[in-house]
Length: 84
Image (cartoon, rainbow, N blue to C red; front, side, top):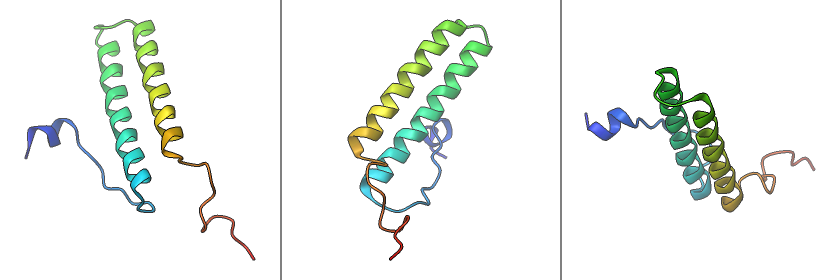
């Protein structure tokens, strides 16, 4: 097993396969990993609760910006709510 795969595991994407969805999914998984590390550091007493909050808030803003730039959720897909 590759070291990077061990430390940064990725799950398979099972949604609608579009480039923007795949990229957002990768961003979401990275967000999850980084939040996990921050939580572990805070739990272990390496960083303060305030520092962990600031870090997670910054990561959340970055994820929201990514979602907006990729246009995820802007337009309903043709499969959702398309009744004649």
